[in-house]
Amino acid sequence: MNKNFLALGLAAALLAPQVAGAEGFAINEWSAEGVAMGGARMFAEDDAANVAYNPASITKVKGEIMKSSYTYLSPHGNYKLYDGAGKEIEDGKNVVHAGWAVGSYYVRQINDKEWFGIGAFPRFAMVSEFERASKASTNAFFSKLNGVSVTPTYAHKFDKKWSAAVGAEINYVGLELQKNSYHPVAQMNVGATQTEGESYALGWNAAANYAFDDKNEIGVVYRSRITHSLEADFKMYPATGGKITADAYGVVTLPDSWDIGYNHKFDKKTRLELKATRTNWSTYDALNISLSNPSVPGVLPSDVNSAKNWESGWRYVIGLEHNFSDKYAAMAGFAFDESSIPYNGGDFMVPTGLRRTYSIGARYNDKKQTVAVALGWMDVGNLDFAGHATDAYKSAHAYDSFTKIASISYQRKF
Image 1 (cartoon, rainbow, N blue to C red):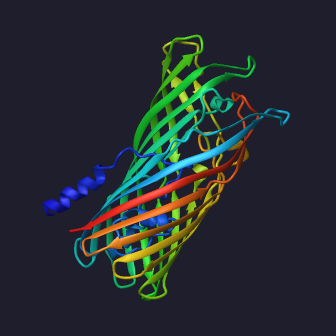
Image 2 (image 1 turned 30 degrees about the horizontal axis):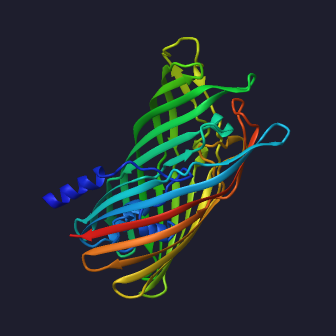
Image 3 (image 1 turned 135 degrees about the horizontal axis):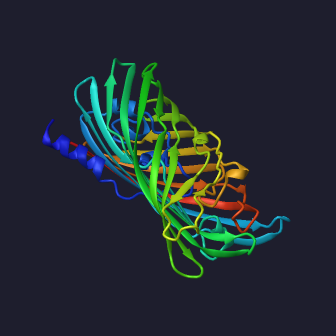
């Protein structure tokens, strides 16, 4: 193992800044080329981001490469709240709280049969914010899930048709939830609460590719579910003044998923990718938090429970890539993402309906370097959901929601 290989591998694992996603829970924006093709990026040639999109395709890398990607996401949306009689009692919009999805990747070809890769990128993240004086704030006025996965990967090419990979996943999450506590009888806010904690957990992934011929290839990627046991700090700031603290504990399970992809090369310049992703969101059945050791005994409940009961769903993507020459290429993509949030499981933490994403991008490369840029627009759609017993409304309607996306990637060969 040479010094260059060791240093770059460690850099790919450690140089992952704090990441924040846009509206939504799953993050698919792992490189500019991936953004441009809607996430249909399972069979790219000589691309270090294959560590994220399809580990079995790192066998398409020649030599040694490193890549960094930065994706800007800016969510926008409106909502209306209704009382028990169906009368509108409030309308508003989210506080625009843009975030960054950052990816770092390194791949090295060991010999003609073996490859090593490592990536640091977000698989799950979100951030949403609403006015603190709004009725929506009794459900949530600030919610953030920071997530980073570090994935050391080994890939093997068996012959001209088959390649496969297996990898570990070291997953970090940092969770922060803020809301106003609402007293339904007195019909007033009695204080604000903040829950903040972080956790590390392990998972794994596996992938395989099969090439029918020089023009047609299929691939499959499985990513395991990851269960976090989250220890957190709970703080309550009563309207009458002062502060109450407690220890908080909760379990957050990030879902497992399957990616199935197909690649067709029309000729040496143009190719088409199709991709379907099945995510088992049913693992997100509740967000339950247990409280203990309060600084003011007898004031706080021992459990703060919220049913979610999300449904598993599909994401479908089509991506097109065309090389105008050896140096210049253009890409385009479209993605359709089903909403997995039921009426009785929605909230202002993740107020997203079905999503349609339209994207375009361009790439320049020479023998040593590759630069790519991409723009995307995500139509988040509408979502209706019920209020909880401690919310200042009975039902909500999120509408006219969208996310602006811009991304840039840089890759270097060694």
